[in-house]
Image (cartoon, rainbow, N blue to C red; front, side):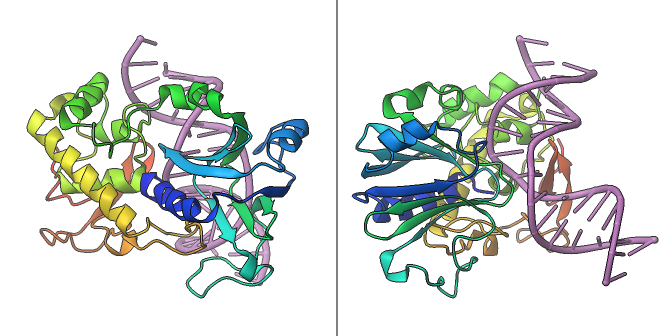
Length: 289
DNA sequence: CACTTGACCTGTCCGC
DNA sequence: TGCGGACAGGTCAAGT
């Protein structure tokens, strides 16, 4: 569930909370999700201070003054929740999706010197945490292969089209979900942007006109920016760094709205499977050309 | 080589 | 009520 807007929301929250915090203790019993050697953790994480929190695609980068970086992927059900010293051991606010921490989904606990804590929760254990030398981060497989950031000022419709057309024989939804084409798009914002551009998700890229791709580019940026503004989409698991929900799904036009009226033409929204994913369309607005 | 499908996990929901 | 199966969807490995 965490796609670009959700991860960016977490990043913005953590970047207000973490810089300057010094790691005092790390508790984890999850070798598969956090495979670093205990020696590296002891030497480069314990005692280190957070310098900044960055994001690339759907990956969070918590940089430390030890010149190491915590690289974290939330995958589908991951959460990074900060509990400040003033709430140490206490519950969370009323608009939280979660209760007292740690809970049964807590995989890693980072405890800071001032008594605050950062919890990495992940119900389905798809996510992961790596501690890497900061200079090595760009060299890991994921970083080498991942495509450009869709909201970068330098990313233009022409480049978007050029990258899409490398996958001319695939359907557009599969290509949007391919992180090596463009970074950060997942199932929610693929469906939402395709609705915005009135493109059927199974349309082959080669059958799309340049004008349609330009519209899709505009709609994609609109949807991603709106979702960031709304703090992301919370279905079951996603929460921000303070444990609070995002509200984008209240504004969603098709995602999870099967059986409801299309806000543009009033037709009934349908759900099917495309590229192995639940896919939502308006059958009238998004005709297969 | 290009593209699609299955595996990784766990909790929830649905039908019988 | 209990149980089996489908489903949720990010990414990589395996399959076509």
